[in-house]
Length: 153
Image (cartoon, rainbow, N blue to C red; front, top):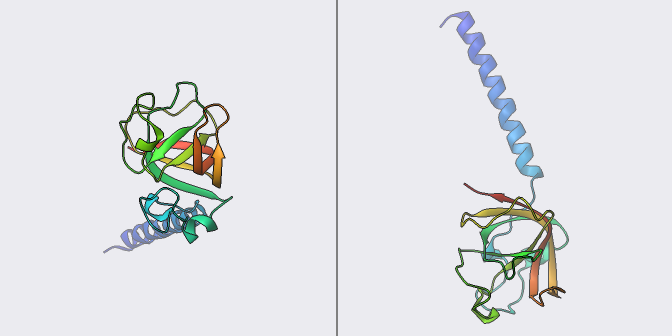
């Protein structure tokens, strides 16, 4: 190996280390992820007790990955996030047909999100506690507010 090749290799290695440190620092600064299986102490039962992790993140920025359910009404300002794709017609089904572990999402902006069946990453502030949406009467226990929505491809 020539000296010039060693210098190029060394410079490349330094750039790689710097990029890695930047990536790790960005990951450390990112919002904590909250998975659907972490929301409740016991899964699948509406009204179950929220997990310690969920309670500890109340009022803080989080990221949750999931799927948008069909809208309750075309003009609503929120959507329902589920762990798996849901094909319920909200006009044809009752709220008893919804999965128990849903998250209601109030996006920062109405534009920029659409329901195309792809998974989404929702990032915003976690709110907990029973709340009734004034416009629709929809009741939620877990919400992400001031959220940004990014399609995962």
